Each structure stands twice: as structure tokens, then as C-alpha cells.
Length: 261
Image (cartoon, rainbow, N blue to C red; front, top):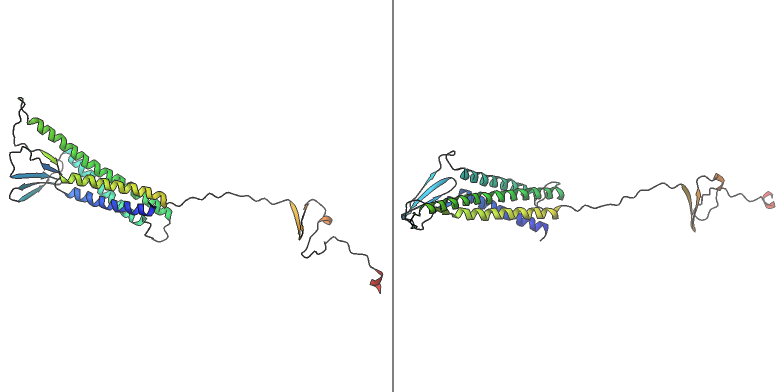
């Protein structure tokens, strides 16, 4: 899978995870009434993070929000905080990931900047997914503990089960939505981090070459070259011209008798 495709897939999964976290946080069915051996079946109760509801057999539903904050259990408040932190981090990571997409060019942003932004958004998505999974798991653990404590209190010393009006709660649909949403967000963040490696430009190592001035004077001629040191006398330095011209220190030929005619 190419880095661009991996980035787009991670981005889409993170969007789905964010939508799932928002839906799970707003749902009222985090815990539902366990109807097994319940003497009252005309009323169905379920609770969420923000309110509790009662549904009657006639179809009428009445919900009541939690009017207190300090009076709520500490676990419930911790789950609220984890879900809200996960949603906020997902939104920030989504905004960063939009500008980090390779298919979107903004100004003079280079690939190295996009790679850093992709890595940042991926880390945010991973933390958001972990927060969502942790919040749902904490609430599920609280339900399991309360369920078995309520079940143990229903047994008498004679070992028989007695039907009571005590309400027991089990897993609601919001827990499964939250687990799936947290997993999608986590997977999307991992894919974004993997795509960062392919988006970063490769570093090229250049071999440094040092040049030193030579201490020799080189005279070139059509058939080859002749090197002479700089400490020789000027009379021995020769300058060769193109076409085989004579050297500067070549002596002139003596005049002939025809020169004075």
C-alpha cells in the first residue's frame, strides 16, 4: 500500500471513529436492565452518561437528566472525561490531518511539513482511540462488578434463589459502539503514522570533495603537456600557443647576407 493510500484510509477510519465516539457518548443505553428472572416486565429501564430513562410496555418513554455533578459516582465522571477528551483530540487531529493530506496542496508547503503534520494527527488519533476504549472499558467493569454483587445478594443462606425487585443492569448498545469507534480511531492513527514514513523526503548524502591549488605550472600543447616547477628561472618557462607557435624565449636566427640587400 502506497503512503498516499495509507494516509487516506487512515483519515477515513479516523472520521468514522470520531463519529462513533460522538454517537456513543450521546446514547442513553450504556446500561440496560437485565430482564432475566425479573418479576417486573412492564417497565424497562436504561441509563446513559447524561440521563436515565424508563420505557413502559405501552411505548411511552420518560427520561430524566442527572441534575447533579458531585452526587454522581466517580467512575461515571471519569468515563465522561475520557470520552470528551477522546472527542476533542479526534477533532483537533482531524483538522491537522486535512491540511496534511498529500492530495491537497496549500501554498508552498513541502512534503517534510506534511509528513510532520501527518505524524502529529496520527498520534492524536491513537491517544483519542485509547481514551475511548479506556472509558468504555471502565464503565463495563463497573457494570460487571455491580451485576455480580447484586446477584450474590439474591441468594439466601439455604442456597435457593429468591426473586426480588432489585434492578440489575447489563451491557448496553452504547458500549459496543464505543469499543468499535475507539478501535477504528486507533487503527486510523496507526495508519497515519505509517504513512508519515513514506511522505518524508529521502535524505541524500553528498560526498565532500576538496580542491587544492597545484604548485606546478602546466603548459599544454597539442601533443601533450609539460610541467615545470614554479621555482625555475623565468627563462625556462615557456608559453605554448595554439597552432605550434614559437616559445617566448626562443632566440632569433642570425641575419643572413640577403637581409642587407
